[in-house]
Length: 228
Image 1 (cartoon, rainbow, N blue to C red):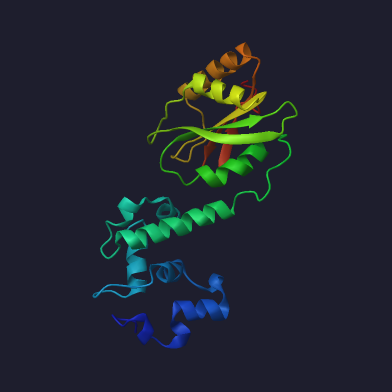
Image 2 (tube, rainbow, N blue to C red):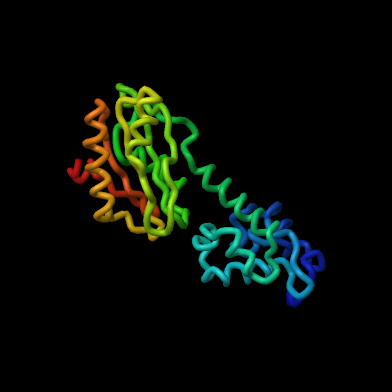
């Protein structure tokens, strides 16, 4: 029925925007929601066909599309930079909306750290490393990305971490990094880094509380596993 008709030529009750307004966003398929963001199709494909092609180019997995950079999206015929940037912006807003609204007054478990960091890191296609800084009462006083790398590794400068901690008058810190593969199992270099940072922090009267590895929606805590 759809053929190459423009969306505006469809019956009103079948158009994605009108259906969203009448029935809510949950009533739409992934392709229909994407079509609303894409807004227009091409001369050979309407916007819903374009949305379906975009999903197909990512294995029909919305999770893969959400992780996709602009450069990969634009490989799909009909997806230009403007459309790709619009989608990336929408996906990033979705991630930020999942972050805790209020910063907790204190951190008492690795699970609380994971709750803060998983929405930020789980969809990244490259490895990043963050440090969370705490005062003597274990109140979170700040967090900062200290490195960003490739698919499997990132270079962490221990001296830079200590400098930032001292500058912030921090007493304790937690190291957090992600594995783009989705696995939260620490590697050999992760274990070496943990011990190196622990000993270096101790020399300047700082305490490494934990090193947490984020993989997908899960995490690994060195402290919980008795490795600190």
